Image (spheres, rainbow, N blue to C red):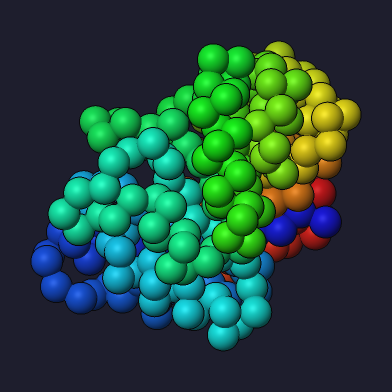
Length: 249
């Protein structure tokens, strides 16, 4: 079964745009969990453009109280700075069920590529080992077609397929080639003993096709599209619509 982790970063973007407390990230996350979501994802960035350190700790407490997964994303190589203690420090305090490592820089609007596993294998191995010692399952952001033998050599438990290229191809009506590449990568991950997650630009429109064609997807992390769709239909109805796609594919 594929599970749904809702990324609530965009709730924090709305809150921060006014510099106050509303909309409340924890209240939104609770609404998603009450609607049946299987977990919550956030990706705090060093510039605190959306999720802040205090949000991470509050969401860790919320997900523990619900007995569901908390997935914390971030770049483990980004140095600490004022207001951001560093990814490892956040994980050490929050103890997320899953730590998803993403190679994004400060200037990126959003995550847009996976790791070069061959070049970064040794550096990632050290990061993965430290996080697994904290009790985290570790997932690595990966492009379709990446070298999965090098990814597996890092010791990570899973990859998260960066699905932006698929979503773009789907929107243009030419998804077949991308789907074949993603399916091949998912099978390669399984052959190397790694689980498969997926996320980025997945939506109600394109999720079903992706899951029908790409095998062994354990988890999807969806935020931008889900929160946008919820502006019209509400969080409860939107989360349930995604769960129906997961159940009916």
